[in-house]
Image (cartoon, rainbow, N blue to C red):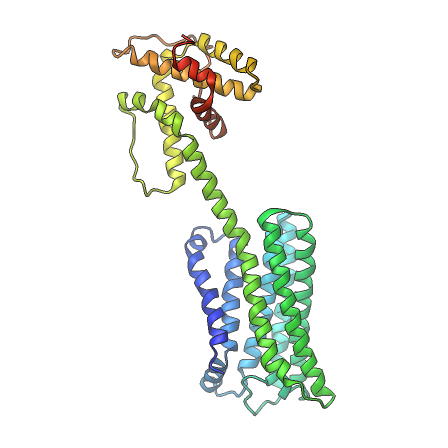
Length: 390
């Protein structure tokens, strides 16, 4: 066996780690991110050290025949613990409960790893077996117990993952539910892998020979299941990130009409700040909101409460709800103020009374977006822009 079926998924896992490295550096204290990175790292290590060429190399370097077997078993146990800890942190809940449950999982599988190493040290495995260690030593004292222990530990993790993710999938929707169902599918392959392993080992105990299930079928099932599960873990997180980025870009785009309406005022006041087009979209949204507020401050002396009141009444009469009517009235008053400012190039206007409503001065996010959308599509604003609301 050339090991390509092992090295390819190992490379895929480590490529995912490289992609996530910048986020990991920025937010290492995030337990969910740490769990994802730990899981991907362990998955890659499992495939790498389970490859027959790597097994031979590790055995040669250490000078201990079959030392790769407990190494791979320990990595599988750590990987199982990482999967359970990830789901616990992913699902959330009271922080103290999450930490306590995570510690119990890590402690439990840590004891399993210690037991695996101890049993291998007590056993005798002089003949190197690169691909059929489980079945070849299935009846050897201590090694038999080590093999059963690692298979039971993986079975407990597989059943727990299916139960936890299956129940959670019934309570959520969207990409999270899709990801959980993909994880369940991946762990069904893992359970099939364990069934193949157990069947081959039990056959050895009874004097039969079903080694092909363990040597050839089980690795294929494990590789398929691990890659499917990795997609399930990464998909909701990736889609959430894409969704957040899309929402931010949508906010930037929808603020465009209001920003363009106020841009001549900001430029005239010398407050316009330019940033590069390749700047992060979050920074561009912040800059656009800042430009809008600067424009509002420049228009303060020109805001006419009468325009606002008439526009609000007209919007309500046209069927707008109070929130939308307020946005349309704000947009109408901004439009009228921009034209009043253009008609007063020397800036001689006196500011409004203290109680006058000034749109956008303290508005953020959705309020500015509503106002911007009203500028583009409200007939009330169009009437003011055309002079009917003067």
